[in-house]
Image (cartoon, rainbow, N blue to C red; front, side):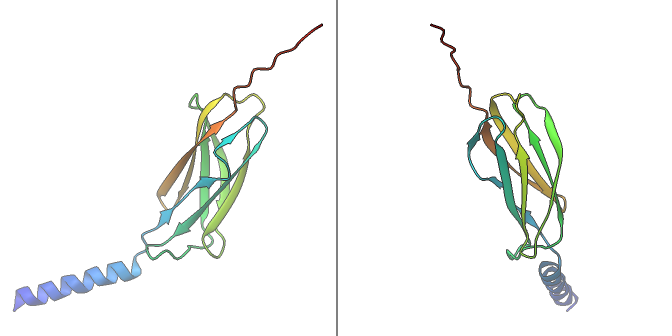
Length: 128
């Protein structure tokens, strides 16, 4: 009898946790897969609960790491009523070529996406 009661109590506790505890997820993406110097990267994503419902009015901290490991912090966005967020970042004029990683963090969870930055173009100057 006690074991049956304990089993029912455990089931009730697990149900309450699943129903009322928010287990968030976050996504991050960029509007393109590669960029040149001075272009603007649009960063977007969604912060949602375990049921896929957007979580509004939460701050998302965004950091970008360049190919040399330098991190550009300081970007933030606030989720809208549907849990969506958007931020922009302009690639510096002197940026290195290679893979950049953008990370978005909110409510203790993060997601990241890699994009190719700064095409390595060779510019030739011809003199006649």
